[in-house]
Amino acid sequence: MLTKAQRAYNFNAGPSALPLEVLEKAQKELVDFQGTGMSLMELSHRSPAYEQVHNQAIANLKELMNIPDNYQVLFLQGGASTQFAMVPMNFLPADQKAAYVLTGAWSEKANKEAKMFGDTYVPFTSKETNHNRIPKLDELTFEDNTAYVHITSNNTIFGTEWFEFPDTGDIPLIADMSSDIMSHPVDVSKFAMIYAGAQKNLGPSGVTVAIVRDDLLARANIENVPTMLRYDTHVKNNSLYNTPPTFGIYMLGLVLEWAKEQGGLEAITKRNQEKAALIYDVIDASNGFYRGHAEKDSRSLMNITFRVSNEELEKQFLAEAKAAGFVGLNGHRSVGGCRASTYNAVPYEACKALSEFMIEFQKKNS
Figure 1 (cartoon, rainbow, N blue to C red):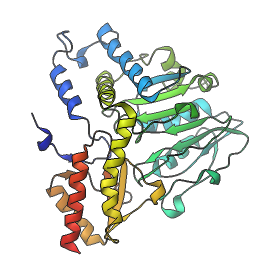
Figure 2 (figure 1 turned 135 degrees about the horizontal axis):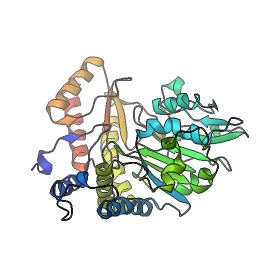
Figure 3 (figure 1 turned 120 degrees about the horizontal axis):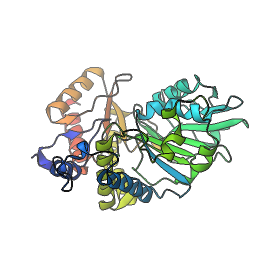
Figure 4 (figure 1 turned 90 degrees about the horizontal axis):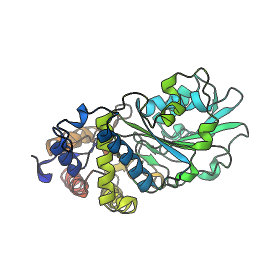
């Protein structure tokens, strides 16, 4: 069994780091889950043993995120990318438009999918500045006939994050929170819907969480929408209409238990701020040797994006970092550069080690 000291410094953007304590517990229970004589992967999803896992995960998510009673928590499949289509299929009527705030590649993809099912408009895009900032709230205005407003709360590729959210009044606000859900407290009541792929902060890939308010569900289109792509299908069946990704949900449940043991979202937020500061402080003190991509007031706590002063040094930086045990520091293939993803399970020690490596690399190459 690997110790903490032997584990890689994992800065992958997703699938990403999981807490060592969670992996060790899953390892212990892998062959025989709670005396059943079976792995959880072998249990029927209709069995009492699995249903307890399933329902406890929902209860823990509601507790940690302080989700009001008038919201449904769903475990779905297909990742956030399937939600890009499910949302307009269910919630974009033919006589209305949807507003998509474009702050990165994933919001652009969500808008592209929505256009297949109805009309959309763009109240703001940061494309002209290579998606380096989040809009000021007074930059956003919405048309009267808007079915919903869609945002992506954290942009993994460009390293920007929303910390204040628009007040959309009677217009439902929908957020893709795939890469910052559970990283800090969010007032769920501001949103009609939140969805997130699990593979950043919640667990392994294969599970998608959707948190949907009852009044939004009540207006959903259920005609000519395939059964599996209707939210009401999953609400009525407690996300058990078909066989769910049982092991992924089990792992998600263990991560939620771990989050409670850490002190909940307040404690996790404090640690995430401290972790990110270790790296951002090196960038800011480097006199341009390292250049952050995002404007300072838009900087993500989850994905720290930066460049090294020239292309050759950047290649050298990434090669030496890899040799030193740092994993996943290459920027997204579409933009290049460097990216350190500091999700909840990435330990403080890993961020400290990276900051020290960056300082030493600059000293040797300035």
